[in-house]
Image 1 (cartoon, rainbow, N blue to C red):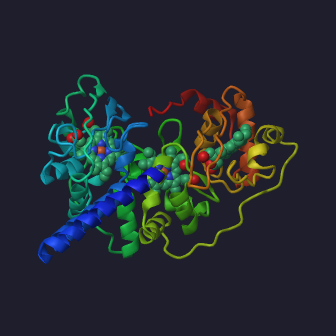
Image 2: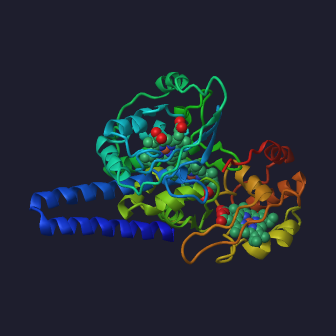
Image 3: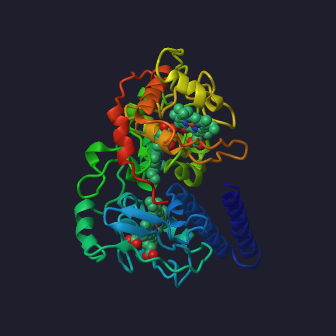
Amino acid sequence: MKATSLSRHSFSRRLKGAVLSLAVFGGTAVAQAAQDQAGLIAQGKYLAEIGDCVACHTPQGGRELSGGLPFETPFGIVYSTNITSDKETGIGHYSYQDFYRAMHEGISPNGNLYPAMPYTSYHLLTDADTRALYAYFMNTKPISQENKDSEIGFPFNIRMGLKAWNLMNHEDSVFTPDPAKSDSWNRGSYLVNVLGHCGECHTPRNAIFAMDPTAHFQGTVLDTFEASNITPEELNRQNWTHEDLKQLFTKGYSRKGTVFGGMYPVVYHSYSHLTEQDMRAVTSYLLDNEADIEALPLAFNGHDKAAPGYNTYMGYCAGCHGQDGEGRPNVAPALAGNATLDRTSVYNAVSLLLNGIVSQHYNSTTSFYAMPAYADKFDDQQLTDLVNYMRTTWTAQKADIGVSKVKDIRTNMKQSVH
Ligand code: HEC
Ligand code: HEC
Ligand code: HEC
């Protein structure tokens, strides 16, 4: 996070410098135009953050926006591209029309884009926001980096084939606010559905790989993890408050647990940059409620020492998560009232025990240990007992997970391509 904010500062200093020197040497009209342009670029940078372009267009350990990160699609592996302002290998040669078509129609000057690029969400961007994004991208640091060819088999390697998919799956139109809702709710909807493209992970896909409009935000298994059900019904059932969601999106953890898997980059690169006002708009939309919500106490129903999961928990887990699931600062999060445990779906509760979670930094003062993987340590019965134990001890869920469910998750789990 340090590197990002540093480069942001030096960038805006450069802009201010340019505006200043123009004001001194040129006429006020020229200075005004430069200031407008600087404002547009700064706005475009913010929109690019909220759109999370960096997360997908930056290779692991590589240079920002230079492309090359792999994406698994039903057709094969697709690599993101270099979207720096480099004229040969990036998008520096794009006209505004080229950029508009890539973002709204999924068509680049080289042909149709695979829907791993979420134009299926971005296509509702307003014209003004598309212009600001364009101004920003034409002014990023150019990086010369050739794009990688996709590993897609015949006949899907013919980009023309995508045209039919495109026509079936979305019409180009602009975001239309819901007149029955407030401005803040509508702003939140725009930030979540269009720029945030949250549905690309959280909405299940139908038979032709399009987001299913009848199951908006109902959650779906991605690979190692499931993008949770984030409908207002589910978030309110779990007693998420505006403050909890704000903590989660700014720091990566809240009293209801941490973000991990594909959700971590969303927070790290994108939603941690939301302004105060936009944050409230987002949480109002997600909770479908603008009023303050009371935070109920986190559940701890007491230990049942006779339950089969009890000894396993005390032996393997309590050292980090606390005897009573209260968590330990800079070691491990609390399990009391934890949202991952308090879900109807136990996919993530099981998969994080099988695979563990790599050590993640949350801000300059908080990082947790890595969560160990227990796939080789526990059999399906032990895992089932443990998950049932945690759910009955720290949530209102029942001990109703059967061993066949756990076995099924272990057998069918896919690993992430990143
Ligand atoms: C979920 C991952 C993802 C996100 C988020 C994403 N992109 Fe992409 N983008 C891709 C992939 C993958 C491709 C390559 C698709 C292909 O080759 O068909 C791509 C292609 C593009 C292209 C066409 C590039 C070319 O070389 O002609 C542009 C322009 C682009 N993205 C801009 C953006 C901008 C701007 C944002 C942020 C607002 C963004 N992308 C966010 C995955 C993503
Ligand atoms: C070495 C310390 C450590 C041990 C031992 C450990 N965990 Fe964890 N656990 C963590 C950390 C750290 C996280 C959060 C990782 C992240 O998201 O950054 C975590 C996350 C979790 C979560 C998800 C909570 C959330 O919202 O992030 C659950 C559930 C969990 N652990 C259960 C267990 C169980 C059950 C055991 C024993 C079998 C166990 N852990 C053993 C450190 C530990
Ligand atoms: C790349 C895929 C991906 C995208 C994009 C994504 N999410 Fe997630 N999200 C996940 C996964 C996986 C989880 C489950 C792991 C976890 O709890 O952090 C999750 C969990 C969550 C949770 C529950 C966190 C918890 O602690 O229980 C919320 C709330 C959430 N996402 C909101 C959003 C919003 C809002 C957006 C859009 C800005 C978004 N997500 C975009 C993958 C994604």
